[in-house]
Image (cartoon, rainbow, N blue to C red):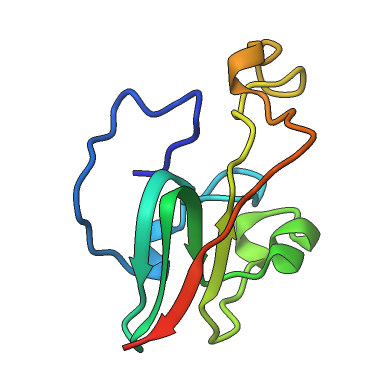
Length: 123
């Protein structure tokens, strides 16, 4: 299940298999979905893989960020035939003044200097 730094008590560490379609969640207003925290590697069906010495956050979707931003209702979303992959150092938590209480300091992405690297390979 999707999770964020302030919402991952229900998740466990392990190796999981999924699809871009299964990562989608039909929120009333289309938005980011399927985020995963604490990841050490990601391997796609075509052999493309990503890994890091620390951890990163990943998102794999059948929708582009642009299509999610432009759609006002889930029925407006149409898969474009691509697999969209996002690799992040980390995201802020999901709580905010727009959808909940203000984020606690520990869940905010507020670092000024970030060192982050990952490797892309093809197997």
